[in-house]
Length: 163
Image (tube, rainbow, N blue to C red; front, side):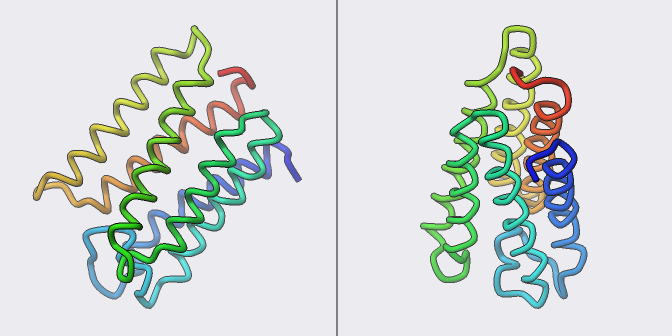
């Protein structure tokens, strides 16, 4: 079950669920994490669970131990509910995203270094703008950052093992 197709399926489901979280919500929340206690929390939980499945399947297949850490980070985001433990949740989210960015840059080859630096920079810029700006919804920034990580992971799966 560690084939390229199954990993792509888990990644795709996770990214689609990230878009469905705010669409299916009874009201607009500024953050995806605020959906943890909403009526559509099953979609929010599913988004994290499919991400965990993806990273735990991807780590042994591509021999990248940081993917285990990212998967555990996704689990810690899910365990530290935003509404109950906001500081712990924000720390877990920041550390998970930072680990994903570090992994993106750590494992890249020379030929893909520029692309990965661009993707990592885009993640940081979008996430920080969403967090600090009143004009950009943070939930949209989170979704865009997730999709950029997803694009990187799909490239890593389908283009080559040493990217």
